[in-house]
Image 1 (spheres, rainbow, N blue to C red):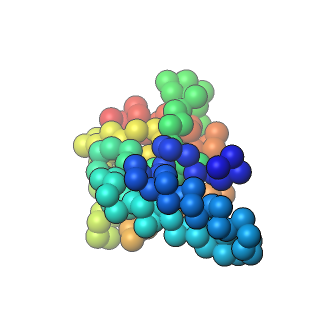
Image 2: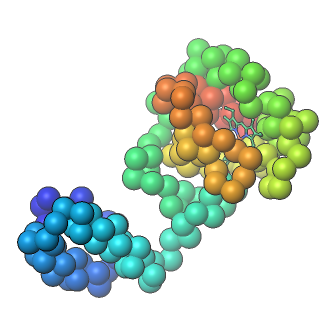
Length: 163
Ligand code: HEC
């Protein structure tokens, strides 16, 4: 299993055995087939997992945060310079929807669902980083992947002061 990126942590119990069997098989098959099985397995094996993938923003927990973001915490939390930089960006890019005080009541918050009221929720850092980097699918929240991770942590540092 060494070359497989799946670990016990993201393969549901009971699926590990089938993963091993399928791994042995795919070694003899094409790279494409290997990739397809690799993609299909975690989905097929997720059915008995109670992770509530994809409900996204507003759920108040970090379930479903992709591995690229999961477990990350803000290295700039409480940093006054970061808060000042984040505030400048927030005012320019975010306040129109999320509101000057973060209450989700900016003039641009006319969509369903409306912009998140940061004063009423407090999701984990990794969930916030993911939401801002990739956007929240099915909502007006766009991806800000053009920003550096540092800039996004600065935004989160500022948002924390509104909560
Ligand atoms: C066009 C309006 C709009 C703009 C501009 C906007 N957002 Fe959002 N934002 C939304 C909406 C709508 C949601 C999704 C709310 C939901 O899922 O209930 C959202 C969700 C989020 C979430 C997820 C909240 C959670 O549940 O944890 C974060 C974090 C966030 N926005 C931060 C930002 C930041 C930072 C900016 C500026 C860089 C920004 N948003 C700009 C509309 C906007």
